[in-house]
Image (cartoon, rainbow, N blue to C red):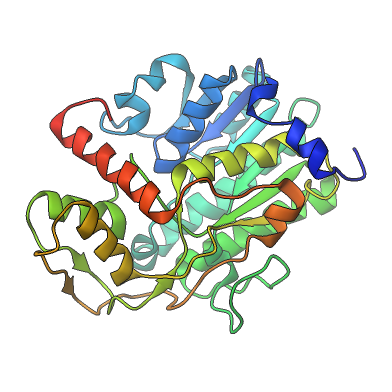
Length: 343
């Protein structure tokens, strides 16, 4: 492994380099909002992609876009070690991008056991399969979350802060994150960890999330529902920037300051929930429709946002989309989705 990579070296390993041509990549969580875009980027760059699908969803972007016809599908659950091992061994996987998870805070609050099983057991199963077949697997990207930090006194969050999740979803991400680090430091599994803020973009069909839920309500002429008081502060990062971040981590795994490391990815903006709702209202020309504040959020950290200084310094990563640019593309995706056009 190289002792380090300069930004010039990193710049040479970009999308135009052909890095992914012929790479055999196993992606978990491909029907999710991030997974579908990661799969699209990999396929378009010449990778041979294998995906793990638990339940087929014809409305997910993986199916609607036709990407499902361009990848190999392994059916099964993250909780089943034999399925993961079969995918890695059977298709000689050299790269693993682990996006599969129960990703809704409210669902984890209501049903913690299922979330722990998927997010924690699923992660150690996958990493154990990678460890056992280290002759095949050369790079593993684990999707963690800003929620892994729990609620910290200091903002913005940096990678050297402790992982102190308290609520069920936070704990599941803290544990998965620490397990990934353990497999690197103990067994040398080539892992890098990505921690993002709130991810939004076309293909997110979880309507309880603020961006897709607000867009759907306004499209229907209804009042968007905000579970909190609207003053919670978050990072909001566009899914295309996230996909690029995950692939960059994998591409740079040969650098000693990347392998085994964790990286925050954020546009480094501080946005209140009400602000993002108002931007969507303006884009959709629905300023006359006022949101409904429930002030009933449970298991949520009030203020949380990240520093991406390390990702900029080590990877040369910066977001390509502003909040308004990302939301405009996202609104256009959903409008096409509901009108039956090409999203």
